[in-house]
Length: 285
Image (cartoon, rainbow, N blue to C red; front, side, top):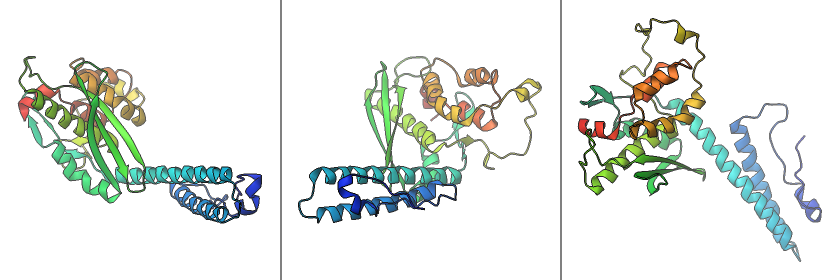
């Protein structure tokens, strides 16, 4: 049976048209929730129109109805955002690291390589990215911001504080202020894009699915450790980026440190090792 949403005793004759449409006998999914919320929003708007046409309409009731409608629209947009994000992340594959870092003899994925691979996918899912900057509370840092907007109307803000890339490997200033800001923004855009869509990188062109086992693992201890949770990995990744880019830790040190407590997947290891300090990457580019 549909569930009637009670609004106010003064408008009970009209409120009966506002109902949820999720089948109570079927487990709800994000898709069914979006459809139900869209139907509820349309029903509430119909009620608002009926109330507005009533002689001596009560302003308080109208305000409550409008607030309810806005909440439904916001929830509908948020749910549509989540559905599209799941779909986009399922479609996005690991990006091959094609650029060479001469300083560390390693490879990395440039921003343009990542964008070329994933932008056709996330735009088809209704997403667009708008980057900007803001003041950071950390001295010598720049805050890079990204508004991830969805065609359904929901926008989510992501941000990352990075040290301004003004010095080279030896610690000496090697860029003008404009160049340092531009370099920092470029790094921030790349890392934020990877974080938003959970993009990983790989050295191979086989989507990171090499069938060969890791021959260099000689100790059975890592296999006995619990796997590192993907949710926790995504949550802590910005912290590791900041530590590496600020020179507090190296990527290799973080991999070793995490490996003492949990078993990292090859994708997780490569994602961390792909973080290159701005001074090093600047020498390679």
